[in-house]
Length: 114
Image (tube, rainbow, N blue to C red; front, side, top):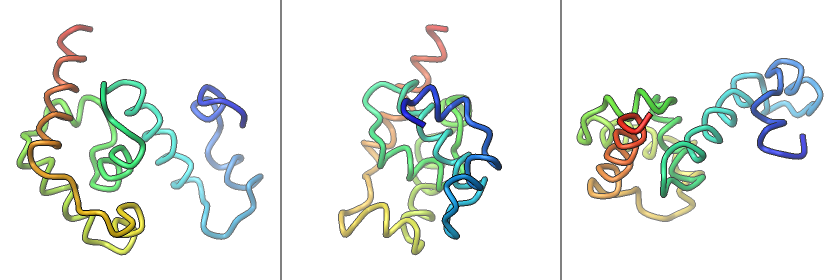
């Protein structure tokens, strides 16, 4: 896998098998694909933000656009307070409601323009 396009086209089970690491399974590859799509689709969204959203169960543009900001914030915080979420944050604070609101607003703008 050399490009984002390669990642998005990769078959998750085969990719995880070829990576050959015990902590990387097909679900991990699918999460990477979801994160990459979100970063490409939602203006201003960064990789770590996409990890928080996907970890919180908001895995698609549609899911984020249809979420209420407070609902999205709760999902992000649930994940941020988990062991995996703390690894993503690396001692940084979780995003605030204003930041999450911006992600939801930007997702809605993208959907409206489509």
